[in-house]
Length: 85
Image 1: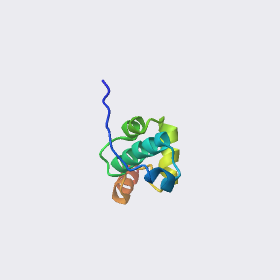
Image 2: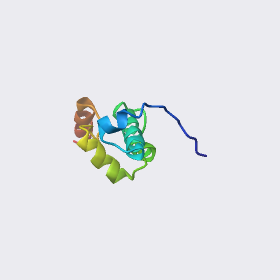
Image 3: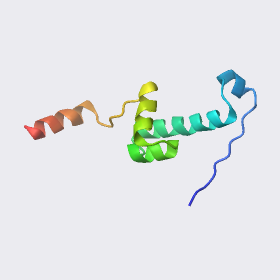
Image 4: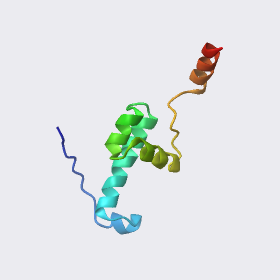
């Protein structure tokens, strides 16, 4: 099942962002997916699906945005390392 989300923007935002309407829509999807992923609300796989990308392209896109592909805190990483020892 699919659903559509509609948002209205003034046309003046497109030239200011140097985007076509489709590029703007794609970027909104990516930004929402990246933020939800960063907050730990959705998995990497689900975020990629929301963004309309495969996982590799999603990871490349979020890395360009400065979003870490890892959802681990430093403490969690250290605990996992200790568990391996």
